[in-house]
Amino acid sequence: MFSFRAAKWRNGEMASAYLTSSSSETQAGGQRQPPAPKGRARSHRENRGASPVSFAYHRCMSIAQEPPLPEPDRVSPPMLWEFVKLADYRVPSPAGASAALEKWTSLRQLFRRDEQDQQDEQAPVKSEHELRLLSQSRLHRLARPIDWRGAAAALDAALADWLQASNADAPVRFVIGQPHCGHPEILAHWAASHDALRIEAPSSEQILGDDGAWLEAWPATDRLWVLANLEHCYLRHANGLGLVRRLLEQAASGALGRGVIACDSWAWAYLQEVWPLPQPGALTLQAFDGQRLSHFLAELMPCPVRDRLRFCNARTGNEVHLELGENNAAVSPEVNQLAVYSRGNIGCAWNSWRASLRATPDQGEDGTEQADETQPDADPGAEIVWVSAVRQEPVLPAEKGEGLVFILHALLLHNGLPATLLPELLPQPGHRIASSVLQLQTQGVIALANGRWQISASAYAVVREFLRRRGFLRDNF
Picture 1 (cartoon, one colour):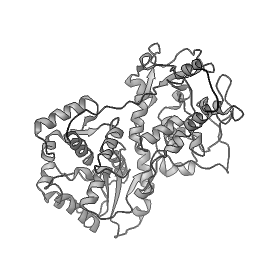
Picture 2: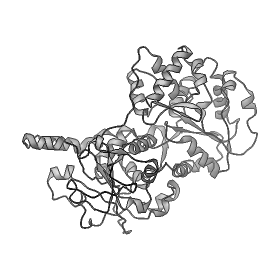
Picture 3: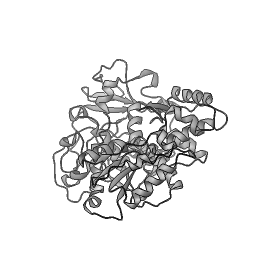
Picture 4: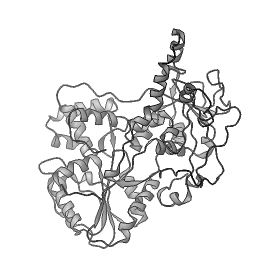
């Protein structure tokens, strides 16, 4: 099961890289937790004298507010939001996520258990049919939408030197974002904080018509500008690349002044093929590994809610610490697994976490439930949230040929497309495209957002792997 222990950040680290609605609750420090109160299971640090089996699978967590105590020798945790160069992006390693499971497997080889014990272990504490989905209001309370202002503050810190230096050799900086990682929202916050001009992408008619009027209308001013969606400035079509090539040439030459261009990671991979000018200084949001994800999930809840929560694994019934330690070993294996599954993509991880939360039918809207024999150390006043062990993934429709693959790939390369443009870009007839789009929507693979069909956050990992196995061009994340 999951429960959260909010991490504390040092003031010096928080100043430029972390800004959320709950930042006022964050305090200096980074201390070890005080002893667990009576009635709660001890943390993994307190259980060092316990058996290895108990260490691996009977860890519990509580949400505690800790007083700021100086620990000068403690290793500082990484910043929650951090922008790095593309080459420095680090996909979370599966080794940390599976370490506890591998240890448990090796231990089981040393001890023989009778058949009844094995059957008891396999029986879930709460089966799927015993649980129900949470209401939208309760989901919002437990995992509110991502506040991208913290990421915007981190971007500001990463661009600070460039902003202060009038360097004609670098008139434009590029920011690359994965799908569902909020690069348009981040750039909107950043532009507002710098009073920068926001440049709208050209229309599809202007792109296909290679209409130079869009570039000619570029504001002639020394004011900083932001183009938040380069992926909407081209189309993968014989007539859809001329405008974006001229845009990139003029931007790199300084003819458009100083500005920031953000681009979806799949579109960036494609544009590097058609306009291969190296951009070693391009920035991206660093991956959310287990440590970052632990802190992020805890911070999704306001402090009064967080203090009385207990997240329980529906299969095992275990409560697991979700805390920020010196290394990934201090983070629950389940959270590390979520970080690995999402490849550090915070939008996909957030969506997957919300989709896994459950309640029992007898729980009220506040989530309170009488503790039972499956949780002898439970706090009877705690709010219990069950975490489904079943990954909620859409299933891709079965279809002969490559028509479905072409649709999925086109949607990713453009970070979404209007339905009217799909027949212009794909080799299939319109009626076949319409049928495939309907199938994908029904299966939850795509969703309509701002007039564009996009790969849904819940399907992104499945679709990415589907395209990888077929050798299609994909992003570098």
